[in-house]
Length: 415
Image 1 (tube, rainbow, N blue to C red):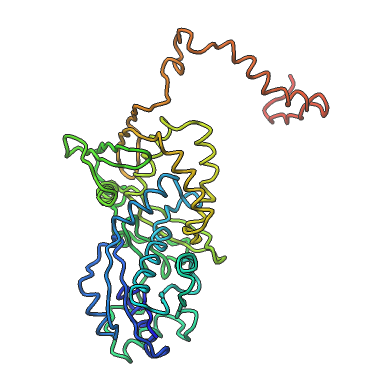
Image 2 (cartoon, one colour):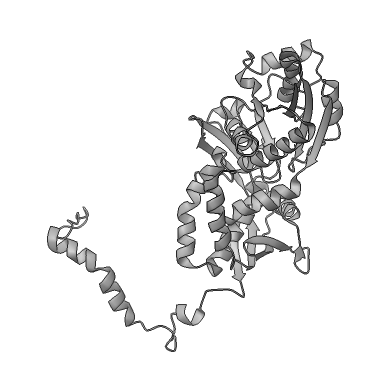
């Protein structure tokens, strides 16, 4: 039997690699996805082979991650439960897709992953396998073996001579990619406990951010960020999606932008506490919303906005490669055809402040919106009929049921 394992070189997947060989008497091929975690991956192949892997693939997915996954999600302004920018969620379907490609290339019968039986990632990986490669057997060791926690894994590693740089007392777990870094478990399992400042990687605290604000400009074409102008550059610089995310991560991190601490609802049913750093994604989503405000039709925007919670839930739960997400993405893509222009932002101590927006496709009409004379562009007298027609059903209800009773404020007393 030949198995391709999604491998990182950490404790869990190192133990899984050896366990698969012993449990399934299988040839195990390691696959490591580079999704912008900024880790040194040169040592991963040697580590995998030392643990018994017959081969190890490292696949660069950074630009594909940005262009085909992050950018379409930003077009939808997707945020789960009003706070989470879906950094881990959106990476999993891409990793699983690449996992399948390696398995097919190698003629493997099965794929294996290191997601636990309590988390969301098992759903995200396996729903992608189901959609794209239903013929492959899926092995999830955390749902099969008798190990109960990290102490058992470390003991197994020592027994089998696996070199892992892990300790039982690690205070939390983390996951990093181009869009964010997440922290959970360990000391963070107490929702009342404030994260220690030393934990953060991508951003400084707002208190330690520069005292001087910094201005940037982001250019959009059809809902996608294509160029960036900073105070260090005289003109806007065209950037690929991957380059844009890296540049915005540095800018946002410098100014303490993008930290989130939340208790979220996992797909499997439990609540969990997560702490996130998403500096670049926070800037990009905010800027995208600003250019949409200038260029997107009202009813189109409201329709799309009404679907954001459902769209975000699809990604969070693992349904990226599902017909409902693909259909909704088509609507979102259609809505973005006019979302082009430039947004100017001020970054200051964890805050994003809009300093301006402009577009050749702007729907904003100053002569209509002006409180001054509009020279016939808008007849204020027309508003009376508009209000009477919209109030027709309210008057009809009042005629039948009587006007709703208005509770008096305690401060309103008869004299």
